[in-house]
Image (cartoon, rainbow, N blue to C red):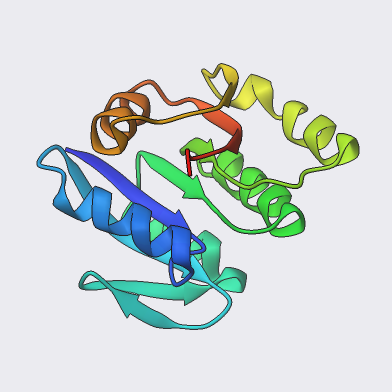
Length: 142
Protein backbone atom coordinates (compact mmCIF):
# COMPACT_ATOMS: atom_id res chain seq x y z
CA UNK A 1 0.00 0.00 0.00
CA UNK A 2 1.26 3.43 -0.97
CA UNK A 3 0.78 5.94 1.87
CA UNK A 4 -0.38 9.42 0.83
CA UNK A 5 -0.52 12.86 2.51
CA UNK A 6 -2.41 15.65 0.72
CA UNK A 7 -1.54 19.35 1.03
CA UNK A 8 -4.58 21.55 0.50
CA UNK A 9 -6.65 18.71 1.92
CA UNK A 10 -9.70 20.76 2.86
CA UNK A 11 -9.95 22.58 -0.47
CA UNK A 12 -12.01 21.54 -3.49
CA UNK A 13 -9.20 19.73 -5.31
CA UNK A 14 -7.70 18.32 -2.11
CA UNK A 15 -11.05 16.81 -1.19
CA UNK A 16 -11.46 15.37 -4.69
CA UNK A 17 -7.99 13.83 -4.59
CA UNK A 18 -8.62 12.61 -1.04
CA UNK A 19 -11.71 10.76 -2.24
CA UNK A 20 -9.78 9.16 -5.13
CA UNK A 21 -7.02 8.04 -2.76
CA UNK A 22 -9.49 6.88 -0.12
CA UNK A 23 -11.44 4.84 -2.70
CA UNK A 24 -8.32 3.23 -4.20
CA UNK A 25 -7.58 -0.32 -3.05
CA UNK A 26 -3.80 0.15 -3.34
CA UNK A 27 -3.45 3.61 -1.76
CA UNK A 28 -3.79 4.63 1.90
CA UNK A 29 -4.62 8.18 2.96
CA UNK A 30 -2.57 8.87 6.10
CA UNK A 31 -2.92 12.63 6.62
CA UNK A 32 -3.59 16.09 5.29
CA UNK A 33 -2.11 19.58 5.42
CA UNK A 34 -4.13 22.78 5.15
CA UNK A 35 -4.36 26.28 6.61
CA UNK A 36 -6.43 25.03 9.56
CA UNK A 37 -6.68 21.83 11.57
CA UNK A 38 -9.43 19.39 10.67
CA UNK A 39 -10.28 15.91 9.46
CA UNK A 40 -11.14 14.35 6.14
CA UNK A 41 -11.88 10.76 5.22
CA UNK A 42 -11.09 9.74 8.79
CA UNK A 43 -7.55 11.16 8.92
CA UNK A 44 -6.03 14.15 10.67
CA UNK A 45 -5.44 17.42 8.79
CA UNK A 46 -2.86 19.70 10.42
CA UNK A 47 -1.87 23.30 9.73
CA UNK A 48 1.00 23.74 7.26
CA UNK A 49 3.23 24.88 10.12
CA UNK A 50 3.12 21.27 11.41
CA UNK A 51 4.02 19.55 8.12
CA UNK A 52 7.33 18.22 9.45
CA UNK A 53 5.80 16.49 12.45
CA UNK A 54 2.99 15.00 10.32
CA UNK A 55 5.50 13.60 7.80
CA UNK A 56 7.57 12.10 10.62
CA UNK A 57 4.49 10.60 12.30
CA UNK A 58 2.82 9.15 9.17
CA UNK A 59 5.92 8.33 7.05
CA UNK A 60 4.08 8.73 3.72
CA UNK A 61 5.45 7.48 0.44
CA UNK A 62 4.02 10.44 -1.49
CA UNK A 63 2.99 14.01 -0.70
CA UNK A 64 0.42 15.45 -3.12
CA UNK A 65 0.41 19.24 -3.17
CA UNK A 66 -2.63 21.12 -4.45
CA UNK A 67 -2.22 24.48 -2.75
CA UNK A 68 -0.85 27.82 -3.94
CA UNK A 69 2.57 28.68 -5.39
CA UNK A 70 4.26 30.00 -2.22
CA UNK A 71 3.23 27.12 0.06
CA UNK A 72 4.07 24.62 -2.69
CA UNK A 73 7.73 25.65 -2.63
CA UNK A 74 7.83 25.14 1.15
CA UNK A 75 6.11 21.74 0.82
CA UNK A 76 8.75 20.66 -1.72
CA UNK A 77 11.45 21.51 0.84
CA UNK A 78 9.65 19.49 3.52
CA UNK A 79 9.16 16.50 1.23
CA UNK A 80 12.84 16.59 0.28
CA UNK A 81 14.01 16.80 3.89
CA UNK A 82 11.77 13.87 4.89
CA UNK A 83 12.59 11.73 1.84
CA UNK A 84 8.97 11.70 0.65
CA UNK A 85 7.96 11.37 -3.03
CA UNK A 86 6.12 14.36 -4.44
CA UNK A 87 3.32 15.24 -6.82
CA UNK A 88 2.58 18.91 -7.47
CA UNK A 89 -0.81 19.87 -8.86
CA UNK A 90 -0.49 23.56 -8.04
CA UNK A 91 -0.90 25.98 -10.94
CA UNK A 92 0.27 29.57 -11.22
CA UNK A 93 3.91 28.91 -10.41
CA UNK A 94 6.19 31.66 -11.74
CA UNK A 95 9.61 30.97 -13.26
CA UNK A 96 11.49 31.67 -10.02
CA UNK A 97 9.30 29.20 -8.10
CA UNK A 98 9.70 26.50 -10.76
CA UNK A 99 13.47 27.08 -10.65
CA UNK A 100 13.45 26.73 -6.86
CA UNK A 101 11.47 23.48 -7.13
CA UNK A 102 13.82 22.18 -9.83
CA UNK A 103 16.74 22.87 -7.48
CA UNK A 104 15.48 19.94 -5.39
CA UNK A 105 15.60 17.48 -8.31
CA UNK A 106 18.54 15.61 -6.84
CA UNK A 107 16.41 14.81 -3.77
CA UNK A 108 13.89 12.85 -5.84
CA UNK A 109 13.83 10.14 -8.48
CA UNK A 110 11.50 12.18 -10.67
CA UNK A 111 10.36 13.32 -14.04
CA UNK A 112 8.91 16.77 -14.57
CA UNK A 113 5.74 16.71 -16.65
CA UNK A 114 2.93 18.93 -17.83
CA UNK A 115 -0.30 16.97 -17.86
CA UNK A 116 -2.99 18.39 -20.13
CA UNK A 117 -5.93 16.01 -19.85
CA UNK A 118 -7.15 13.11 -17.79
CA UNK A 119 -9.86 11.06 -19.46
CA UNK A 120 -10.06 8.34 -16.78
CA UNK A 121 -9.15 10.19 -13.58
CA UNK A 122 -9.05 7.22 -11.20
CA UNK A 123 -6.80 5.11 -13.43
CA UNK A 124 -4.60 8.11 -14.23
CA UNK A 125 -4.02 8.97 -10.56
CA UNK A 126 -3.34 5.40 -9.51
CA UNK A 127 -0.85 4.84 -12.31
CA UNK A 128 0.87 8.17 -11.90
CA UNK A 129 1.19 7.93 -8.12
CA UNK A 130 3.24 4.78 -8.42
CA UNK A 131 5.63 6.52 -10.84
CA UNK A 132 6.38 9.42 -8.40
CA UNK A 133 5.90 12.13 -11.01
CA UNK A 134 5.86 15.84 -10.34
CA UNK A 135 3.13 17.77 -12.12
CA UNK A 136 3.72 21.42 -12.81
CA UNK A 137 0.12 21.97 -13.88
CA UNK A 138 -2.95 19.82 -14.24
CA UNK A 139 -5.84 20.77 -16.47
CA UNK A 140 -9.09 18.83 -16.58
CA UNK A 141 -11.37 18.84 -19.63
CA UNK A 142 -14.54 20.92 -19.23
